[in-house]
Image (tube, rainbow, N blue to C red; front, side, top):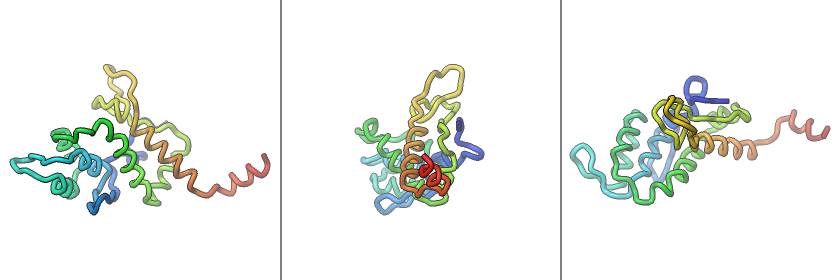
Length: 168
């Protein structure tokens, strides 16, 4: 079981560097892409107004995913966000793991349960490990496991799998 997306499993984090291209803009992490998708209207940030398109380009050039996440918590988010956020996350994570090296790393987790353990009380995307929080939904972990399953189904079976099936 993977209980945190750090260390050996840091590549599972949305902060991990990757390239996500969407509508002509390339984002340097899933976090960047995800925050950019939160907006469809003008944004007021640091004393300036930005169109949604300009704001998305601005997000794409910010170096730190942590800074992007902080900005994302202060936005005027799109009206349909609650009904769309899972869809946006799944698309971003799927795009991330189209990179063959990252796909191989995800597949190397085998059938382990992937849980985005955290201490910042995020029980929607993960499971908070503090004593006050109860069960989390672990939606990011579920998306990762779904993407992994889809990758497994698209990859060719190993020689060992072929031999096992012939002997069954």
